[in-house]
Image 1: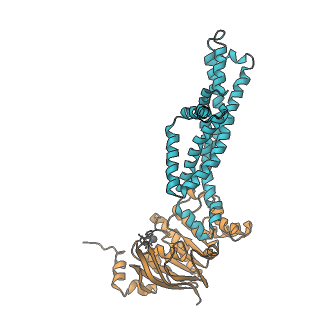
Image 2 (image 1 turned 30 degrees about the vertical axis):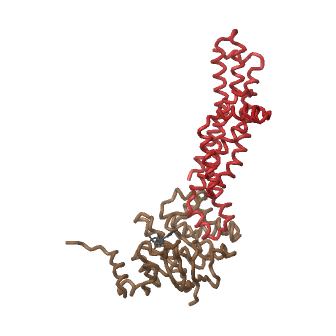
Image 3 (image 1 turned 60 degrees about the vertical axis):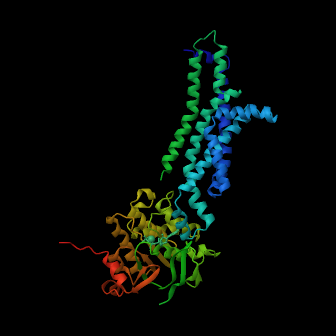
Length: 222
Length: 248
Ligand SMILES: Nc1ncnc2c1ncn2[C@@H]1O[C@H](COP(=O)(O)OP(=O)(O)OP(=O)(O)O)[C@@H](O)[C@H]1O
Ligand SMILES: [Mg+2]
């Protein structure tokens, strides 16, 4: 079946190392995305025309551009055009954060807009001042909406890390391909065994996270 | 009786649309004032001005000796004295019923949590909802939500309650359970300004009836005279619009 190649040398360890790189890129990017996304989402809620225009263009760019193209632009473009020497991992984090920030900002904007005016007004008429209203009533409602969605974003990022191999980061799929190449002669079926393992690894990384997101969503639905 | 609220010649307009001009009203402690009038005549806006949710252009609103002004530094403190319940359900969806009731007293008035919970449970018992204390608002019917909203306002020990068509969004069979709570509060001597389209209820609860139309108080008086012997044509027409006659 081709699983035997995994037992050769340190192939399992190499695959796991690749998964770790993928998780690291996703996690760092998500943290950056949440911080920048929340800031941007709140800024957009202020309804300043200039901010809104820039935000729209940014959002559209992220939606239209394939992540792979962005990766190439940042990784190769920055080296060529700007003479920077970005590591493949930094380039990936930049692209993933660029993408994640847009998604988070839109989530924050949407969550804020979804809170009815009456929530602010009834808080005010109970005697809450503006800071207290945000602290006890608005932010908790937004966080409840946002956490499951951000977790969902993490799993999508982990999945998308499979693209990162194109710019040469040692990452699960890449390691998988190296193993297949190295064993072309001895195990012609290596492709199946390796890709099945890669599938299981991605599944093991994403499934618990997305289940947890689902659990939170259920718990907080209202 | 002592005056609790004084609205002096207030005017309110949205951009260039005048809602009312030179409107005055005095409410005494323990009095229940019921305001009725055609849709769009400014009843909600009037209540919202009293609570400084809307800015007035002219005049003054004085509650318990303090002027109410949206720009006032101590606005939140004054608002504590005014309880308001809106037409749409406005409970905080992320909190249980008990938490909805205790949040404001604990965070704003620094009431001890245990005392606040004890008081909340007593109130819930009175409105027949003690078994709902750990439920979330989404698990309650509209009528139950409005009863909780009334209790939430009462938890701040307001000097006056403003109720804006609190049964207008309810199914008919739930109207009663909410209005019974309001009647109960009236009997207890609470000061209230009530806006409603429920004429039978208005008659039962009002110490004083007010008919608003075209941004003015057109007629006011005690409930019996108001309903049985309206003095103005406009009120007569308005009241008549609630009657149904069988056409043979
Ligand atoms: N935020 C607003 N901006 C502009 N106009 C408004 C606003 N709020 C209310 N109005 C207008 O002010 C007038 C009074 O509205 P209000 O809601 O106070 O009437 P109402 O007597 O409460 O009516 P209803 O019985 O339908 O609740 C209406 O003509 C309405 O269109
Ligand atoms: Mg109204």
